[in-house]
Amino acid sequence: MTLEEIVRRVRDRSARLASGLPVAPPPIGSDFSLNGVVPPPERWRPASVLVPLVKHDRGVTVLLTQRTDDMPSHAGQIAFPGGRRQADDPDAVATALRETEEEVGLSRKFVDVVGSIDLYRTGTGYEITPVVGVVNPGFTLHADPREVADVFEVPLEHFLDEVNHRIDSRTWQGRERRYYAMPYGERYIWGATAGMLKNLHFILTAGT
Picture 1 (cartoon, helix red, strand yellow):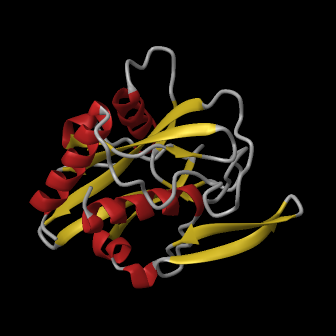
Picture 2: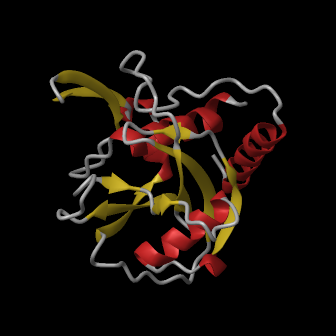
């Protein structure tokens, strides 16, 4: 799939969501989607992540981070750069770009925002807006060592091939929890990150 086609499909999805036009539901809307009905919190806390699609001559990659082992939540997990919306963030895009600059030092001048795709709700009470952006060549990274242990890239084609999608499970708080996982080599990509990648796969391969 060409970058131009990727951009077209994401922009179309984003525009339809923003205008309230009907869209096919995404495969997974929350951490609860594979685990039955779980009462949601009374008020979701807004957050945003950047889904950075890095443009290379060899193709498109997805930039991901690995959180440090001493983070208070989701320690050691693989994630998109992003975080909770702050009071002075005008919108979800601003949150995603600010958090990305703070976490990995990727300047927003290298990011062409394509659009926001389907919301994802987490078991910790966050409602995440994934903001897809094309990252242009020439950028440098300076990861915040307090939050980010590593920054790496995975070919987008890995996530577009369903043979790499699986449903795993583990026991959490005395209950079995099922979730998507998309391992890449020694990287175990799972949970909300894999869920949002599953939705991106749907948008890019199944239409609107």
